Image (cartoon, rainbow, N blue to C red; front, side, top):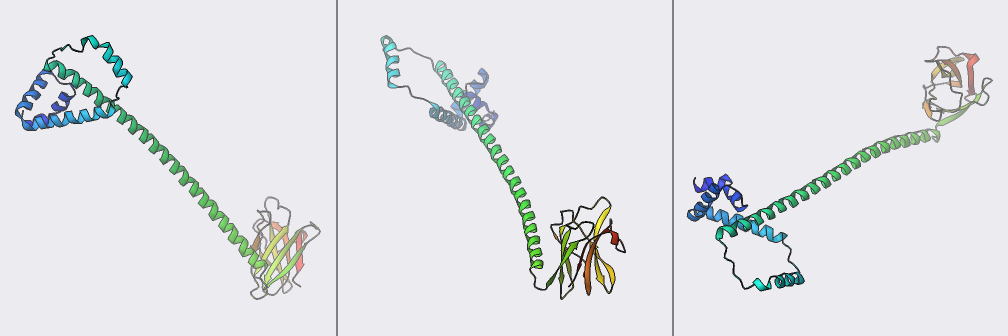
Length: 265
């Protein structure tokens, strides 16, 4: 194998970690002795592992050092020869353990970071949902406020003529107000009090014009009549009345079902 093939094969990494078969380790050692590129790569790998292991090392305390030295005192002058092969294997195993420990710590840190990132994403998603709900509620409130302002503008418009409608025999407590524009003859009705119509029935507004009762529109009191409602324009109206008709309205008023009436005055 060439030096480039040995470097790319992963044999050098296995070698510095104490792995590899005897044949593979022998091949690496021969290449180290003859190939400068292999030798430089091995030196770089070993230096990297030693630095990483050094960052994880914990120095023993002074008392601990003293206790160990006292325990081996009688043997401290004795020199025990060791072959280079016997020394290399434990060193490589120690470096391998340090590297594996570093990888485990790195994996745990990455998992924690990933979990925290998911938590942040969930919180952001919740905040975006809350923001969308608040935006919808704000739009509803703004529309309601605008509608209220428009109704107040009609009520306080000096060109609007107020015409009270009084309850009749069917319900003396019924009441409503007509606001008719003296310039355009636009008509608005504010239902103050009317009984809820039975199923299939609906209130209808009539205007007396030239001695005849003319349809001025159907009332919508589904919201209990607390809303100013625009009706049909009625020029030359002399009076207004409200009757209970079939749902969808009638061509002629049912006078026996008259609930409200009031002259323009």
